[in-house]
Image (cartoon, rainbow, N blue to C red; front, side, top):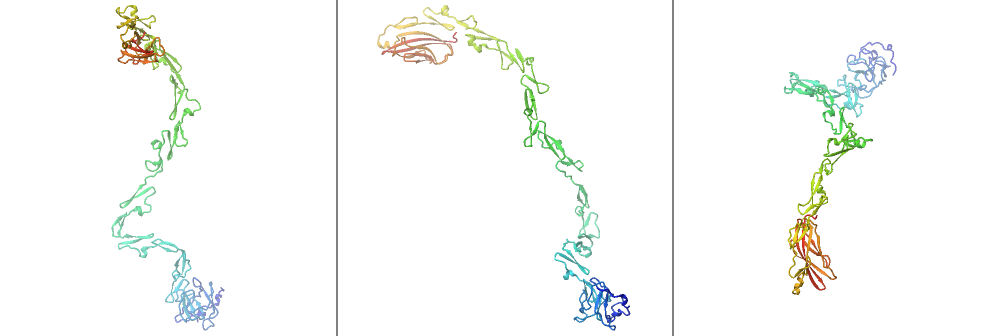
Length: 605
């Protein structure tokens, strides 16, 4: 840029146009240029311009170049019909020629820039504008539509008056529009894009609008498009109808605020007035899960289960188990017996002792003071002993003395016949008849009636004494037999051989005494030939008196046999057996007959 010439070099104007511009301002109309000072041109608005050299026609050569005052240098030669940074308008030949360009401060008929080219005035526009059809007016050039902007693809072009702006791409919600890079509300009421019917007025809202009837409903109601008043749900239409802690409840024409139910955390519950959460005492309300072996301790919002005294946690720390104080204590807790109980222990004493006042030691009890024994008592440490006088014995209860039944314990030892028990002792008795008591007071002596002559047997009978009595027996010999002793009969002769073989050679009487209840089998009589010789053989047969089968015979060897009791005799009884013995000796057979008088008595005294 060059400095402008001093203002003194410019003569004052003397014509409608500036003097030096008179040749350039010749127009068919009155001078388009005013007498004001020259104007320069810049990118935004015209600036003062001073032309170097030349004068208007009649005064010298036209201008060759121009100087922008405070702006860029502009060449004097321009295409005809092209305005500087403006719209295009052809005023003359469409050929290039050198013209003098004059930028005048007063635009004349031009709306923005008046330019004198030769003898013609030309209107042009500022950057961002375009010349209109009348050649004088300028209108904004929309660079965003004509693609003359410099915004990138990721930017949004927004047209402004005479220019444009590039903003980052932005999408607005319905009811808003992008303006200067921001979403601004669209006033549907002002733009007339609302849908309110007749009788309603449009009320703009942020992002929308609503139609308000000219005849308003009561408070709390809204008129619908048909003119009906409908309830307004203030709970949804108002942003915060109720203060925190309250809930909105819509009513007809209005609404109410109700306190929200207080939601308390676990271990808490609402207070009576419902304004705060207070701790739940699970221990007092019995809603805890502590077991019987645990004690509940309340905590804020919770509780704790601790083991009761006498209990401890198990190895896993889950449950409380009983502590066996009897085992766990290093010292002896009880003098006698320690008994573990659930959560504690108990001392007990052995029988004959009582627990002392300290609950641990034991004291001896004198049981004799309580007269627990029926006769005699002796106190001993920790117990007592009952004992009885002679003739008595201690019962199984250890307290009562009962009479000793000496007769039951040893009747066969104490008395030979009958023992009679008396309190504390016993007495021996003999049968009413046939016995007498001896000097020792225990034994009964049989009375031998036969010896004493107290029997009643005839002279032809023989008296046989038995225990407690006697029997009168007759030992008669049959025909052909002769008595050789008191108890033997021998045969005298035989008529034939068969008779000699079958008839007994000797008949002998035997008397046997036994006690009833004899254990069986029992040998009661042994029989054999006397003398016996080698080769002797005998055979025994009971021929009479054994109809009930109490007796039997058996050979012990070839020449010896026995008669045995094979059936027990329980009651006193007399038996008369005929036992026949056949003897085979040196080829001959001899028969012998034993007549046995067997007496079973109750006692063998």
